[in-house]
View 1 (tube, rainbow, N blue to C red):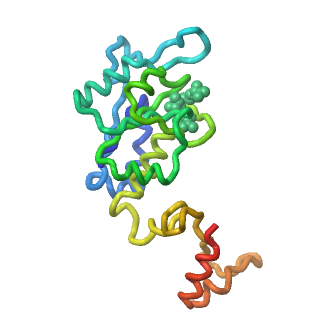
View 2 (tube, rainbow, N blue to C red; view 1 turned 60 degrees about the vertical axis):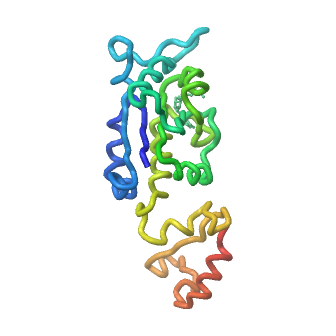
View 3 (cartoon, protein in one colour; view 1 turned 135 degrees about the vertical axis):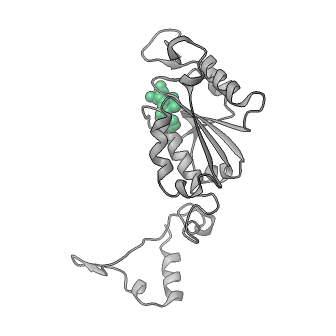
Length: 213
Ligand SMILES: C[S@@+](CC[C@H](N)C(=O)[O-])C[C@H]1O[C@@H](n2cnc3c(N)ncnc32)[C@H](O)[C@@H]1O
């Protein structure tokens, strides 16, 4: 899959590319490309935003800047999914992640300050996604959330088995995963459930099913 992120701070994504699972799939299942709006702006001095019509605080990402970036990168063939990260978008769920994992090519648009000129969301993007009902300072963290959520679902990203019985998965009927414990078996009087120490795999499996929340 090719994932393209349009941002004002491409360098902010560097740490992600060094961490698993993204590092594991980079260059094979995942091609992550980072584009700076400033490198593509047709305006002078790297300008990318402007004051809002009608007045008010903050700066708004300009539609001509985003259009120029998309045109320069894709010409006439943009990806089928161009996603604007915005609090006004539909709320991200695991079902949306699973849907996006099937796409061969996705572009993510991020903004800062007051946000996007609405014409970007309506005319240049195909989707708008919010990562939750709260406001962050920029779209870079939401883009990172989406990159991570998608990357870990790509083939080979996780060690075998660890991505199957997860919260929100079909295997758990969309529920939350059962609790996990590790050594020590007792700490400050807090005990690991006996069944998990029993070595009886059938009982352990039953216990886990019962504890899906
Ligand atoms: C400070 S926010 C703009 C908030 C906007 N003025 C509002 O009230 O809805 C700047 C940018 O951060 C990103 N952003 C902030 N919160 C987000 C969220 N919950 N989901 C997705 N993107 C978000 C978006 O790209 C947004 O344009």
